[in-house]
Amino acid sequence: MGKPYEAELRCLDRTYSWACQVPIDTLRDFVRESCGDPLVIVGSGGSLTAARFAARLHQEAGSFAKAVTPLDLASCPVRHCSVLLLTARGRNADIHSAFRLAANLEPRRLVAVCLQVGSPLARFARSFRFAGLQELCLPSGKDGFLATNSLIAFVTILCRAYGGRLSGQDSIPAALPSPKELLDWAQSSTAPLLSRDTWVTLYAGWGEPAALDCESKFTEAALGHVQAADYRNFAHGRHHWVAKRGEETALVALTTPDEKEVAERTLCLLPKGLPRLRIHTERRGAGGGLELLVKMLYVIGAVGHGRGIDPGRPCVPEFGRRLYHVSPRSSQPTEPTWPLVSAHEAAAIARKNDVTGLGALTKDEVRSWRRAYRDYVRRLRRARFGAVVLDYDGTLCDPKERFAGSSKELRERLSGLLREGLLIGIGTGRGKSARESLARMIPAKYWEQVVIGYYSGSDIGGLGSGSHPDKERPGHPALSRLVDLLQGHPGLSGVVQFDCRPDQVAICLVDAGARGKVAAIVQDVLARVGEAGVRCLESSHSLDLLAPGVTKRTLVLACEEAAGKLGRPKAALCIGDRGRWPGNDYDLLTGPHSLSVDTVSPDPQSCWNLAAPGHRGVQATLEYLTRLKVEAGVARYR
Image (cartoon, rainbow, N blue to C red; front, side):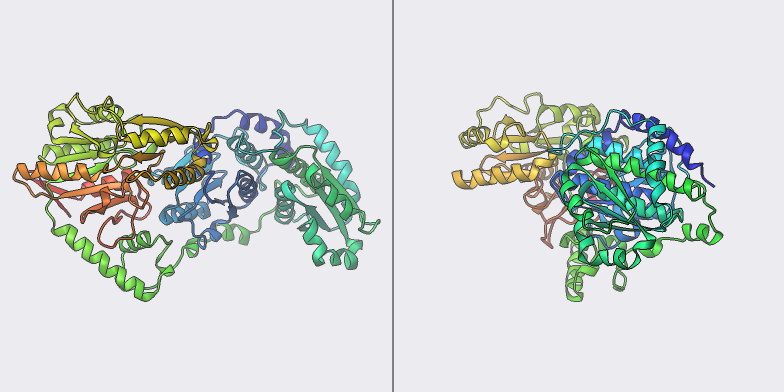
């Protein structure tokens, strides 16, 4: 089983060169959008080391992060987090289970990175449209028994994805040292330690991934026993092992320039006869962490050579093979056994309460919300709609489709509803670009049935009308005063761009990770200036300042009025994605018949998300529109 470990080490420099150049747009976009969020990174085996490396990168970029195994994920409340899954081949049952679980828990963002193209995980991941997938073809192929080339590939592309977001960091090296140079160093450096079966590995900061990977590989290849501890935790009792069992123990010290002083002060106090190995890098930050990891891989190879064990090709026992294929289904979170609660109902109630599952609620809360859910569904089924009003970005097109247009399935479904005579309204914060995209999506013969509310409902016109939107109308003076103040704010310099339209100002984020800071500044300016009636709402890509009285409900009223003139029910089914305040669909989804494809308000009478678990955005919109039955221009929700 596996490959000779030394053969894998000889590929590391080529793997590193490849990882420094391979396109990683999906991962880079995920990092850019997730930098302001907590992050959970999932990995097992060698991928867990890469997950720990990613967690440290994310934390140094300014947000909390945690590396977990697939089994750990079941106990993580990830609804307010982004989730990143790392897998070398995308084949093991644990990572499949973790991906399904993560999708059903509906985190803010979900991306899997796989170093094999066309893996089973890739095929499965495509069933959740909101999730992202970065597929790469690792040139060295499958690792042996231990993660080597895949680990260095993961760490390198992660460093690139976070590049420019870390202050005070040394860049990663342009190339790795030659394999012969590293192998000679490792064999000579480890020779004095080979007689000792227990190694104490001390680290701090960016030495952590290498120290924990050392423990993992020593155990997996049965090379010996490793105790890993940071320098100060070692001082809190772990040193007693050295005092009592020093004759069977060796010491490994991992250091970068940042912890050199604490390392020196610690090492000089330990017994002089303790064999020790210093693994040092002059690089700071992630570059130093990567260098320590590479050196540790060669140390593992040298120890294996000295002990007559090939770490890449151990003899795996039969019970080990069976253990690997044990079903991970027990890792799924268990819900209370509420009678007759479907997965859809449980998901809808959890979304309303902004929790991971019903286990976070008391029995009384669940009973109350079940009554509210059933009342709402009953009311929705009984209603007759003369129009359907939809948000555009995030509802009719996913963020990655924003300027490319909606999917073929959605275009066909919209055409089918229009063919049955249904009146459709579309609300957007955009102007002419939205009209042009919709004109490409919808056949011209149906344009008279489509009403668009441009600039968040402040400019309403038919899809076939060339006079809308009218960007030349004079803007509201309150917005002009606010823009002048915001443009001069030092905290927004280079972080945002302003797009001024009549009755709306779009504050576009240059860096999605700065959303929290930008929102705080804008709200602070609004509170201090006190422009009555001006509101700031949030979309997936911007913050929108709206003039007094501007609301998407204006579009809803216009569509209901148009339906009434045609002799149809003056009621509209409203569908959007940002239903929780201050989302830009909050107004749209306050009506009695409103569905969200993403976030919801806590109101039990409106703005429910009834989509299947793990469905979001256009995938949820398609689910809703498929449930509509239209006869003579009147729709019912089945």
